[in-house]
Amino acid sequence: MGLAPSLNTDDLIAALPEITELCEPYALSLYSIDSSEMTPEHWLGMAKAIEDNYDLYDAFVICHGTDTMAYSAAALSYLIQCSPKPIILTGSQKPISFDITDAKRNLHDSLLCALHPDSAGVNIVFDGKIIAGTRAVKEKTYSFDAFASVNFPYLGYIKGDQVIYYIKQTKGEVCFYDKMDAGIFVLKPTPGMPLDIIDTLVRDYDCLVVECYGMGGLPKEIADRMASALERQSCLIVMTTQVAYEGSNTGVYEVGRYIGDKFEYLEAHDMANAALYTKLMWMLGNFDKNEYKKIFYTPVGFDIYG
Image 1 (cartoon, rainbow, N blue to C red):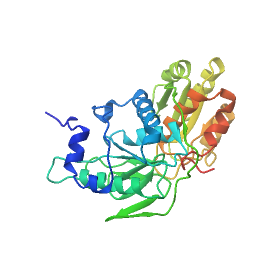
Image 2: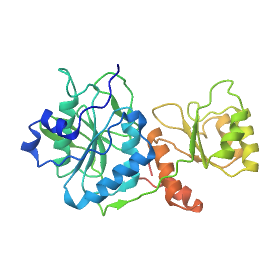
Image 3: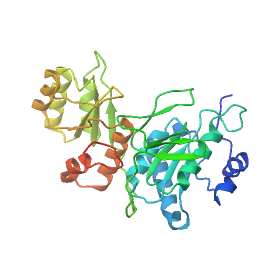
């Protein structure tokens, strides 16, 4: 039998009794599911719970499974913007009940970070690192240093009981959103991929994200098929890369420039894929089509270089 969610919020507090020495905690159990089961409805539920309780507490710490924590952190970065109160997501690679676990340290570090006067906005705290919610990626399945910050520096570190910030989130007047449009498909081209799927995707989805090779290479036959499909059906096209680091630039190689001659698209550049996906869901759910380009390229929580 595999690992499954079992602890409730009271169990977490009991496992780390020093929590009560740091703050006066209040625990709310929203969901008890494996994080692979998370959906946009769960992200909206978390944002609503924070909005409903925002005036009652100084900070919020969300304990979350690691598999989709980067997606949840990115989604909350768009659903809750400019928050002067910190919203920290954390989790662990080993359950808190194990003799050898990273859970206690991560929870303790998250509380220290949540209590720090420079903390704000949505961040992930994991393995002593503070990561902007829009820049996190899980890159290891077992190791305690499971999360990295993609194409952006760590915001800070926790060393012992000391929180050290190098980059601070912008504090402002908090703004909540309550809509996301899940009509997005992420296409990862592979050599020899059947082309018929392109017509179906352009027809059935509001937005198609294409994970190109390298800096932005896409076989010409795929570009031609997409151009043909777009002549019959409107669909927002976004280009990104399959490569985790350093981002896309479709203008470097001829195969990338060929795409621009065939149809219009937005380009993700240095965005992390979790942030790209959730930003598009937020954008499609809350704005008109004629605003898409402006909204997409406007930075939110360090998600894209402006």
